[in-house]
Length: 154
Image 1 (cartoon, rainbow, N blue to C red):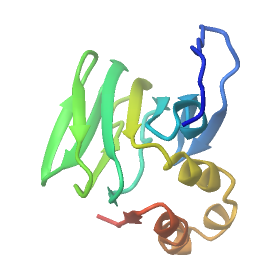
Image 2: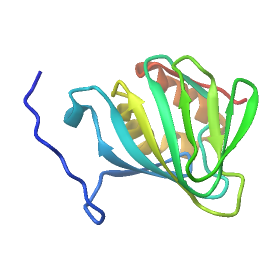
Image 3: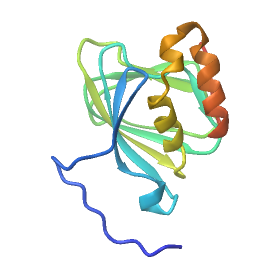
């Protein structure tokens, strides 16, 4: 285990930011900063934003809604989550979320253990699926396989 120091990220500090699934994601802590224990980020989800249904086989995922409302789909239920709502998605659970409102939503997202940020980075740099939307799911699953994720159309 490497020796780590206290890390502070203040408002206005530059954060690693990527764009994917129509959303903006700002990283606070990655595997590098946490010895692989967790990945912590902020998600800014505009109206209509959110990823397709997917399953993570390696990590738990947690959400805490700060602003707006996001609808989560898991276990064949729709859950409207507004400010102050916390959700935990266990590994292996098929889930997705979507902003079905006219207001941008903001939430904190936590993955444990870390590692899935590699998928975020690769997907953000992906220009193939944007150029070939009919093959986007295949491309997402090709990348997802490396990180223990599978994506679905519904």
